[in-house]
Length: 117
Image (cartoon, rainbow, N blue to C red; front, side, top):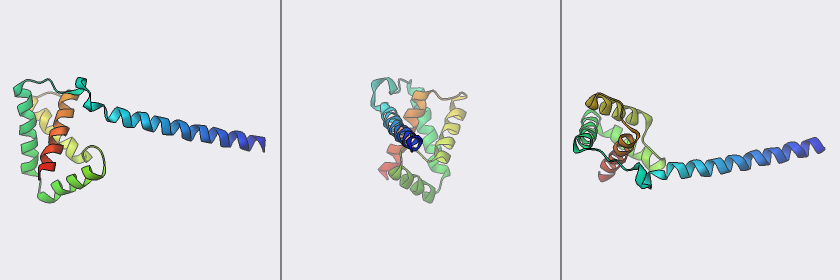
């Protein structure tokens, strides 16, 4: 019986630890509001974001865009397929990988663009 109580208290401790980790993770995900996450890019770099978004909107149908909006209303972030395509388009336009700030800015602007509709 003592062993079962020890396992039960360990399980409670693990669940409690998981909840703490979950709260920390949620806080980390909300960090983009801090100044160090803001994009400090040249106008050329900001322009590629608009071009990538415009190209994605042109190549997708309305049902796909509506599906992305529904996804964003239910969860954080973009659907993986949308995110991957936008990152690919951005990489093609810049001929390099995007920085974290550029990725953040692109995702932010796509959300704004889709919410306009």
